[in-house]
Image (cartoon, rainbow, N blue to C red; front, side, top):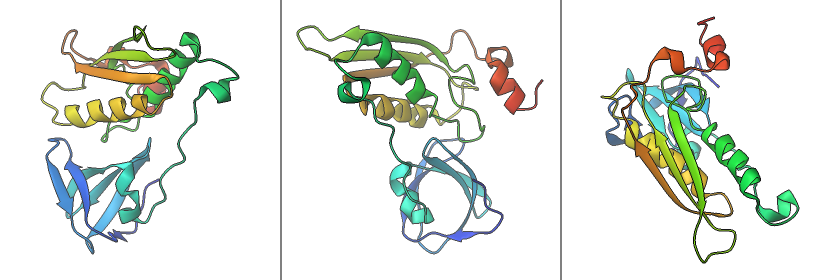
Length: 188
């Protein structure tokens, strides 16, 4: 969703300045333009500056929070299988977006590794280790994207511990984009 017309913020809300990541408060009554609405987060322009607004503050933009996908043992018809959980983990990471690029972090090639290990002594309880990078080492949005991945993975039944590590080797390049991402960005 993109708006050519300004919307008026209905209440104060937290946001991150793009691309530096500094947390700020946008004030009720300010005019905002939504430039991107993907994965439950919003990229808005207020007074010529770009900000990322989290889903929990979507009401400040006059938006309804997106419906959360449900993944549970009951929904999958039995105990949580590692294979089904792994599929859902990748689906959740595909719902995380760079605030400046309308492509998810998986198709951008930012996720280098994802390991799922059972937590010893706990039934149907897993620890997830993610190694990911950013499109630019100096991007201040790293902690915001890390937290987004962690929150989405912890929302899954069976995932009880998540560590998201930012790594810089190998350095990201456009060759890491999936074909779908290249097509979406007009690079094919």
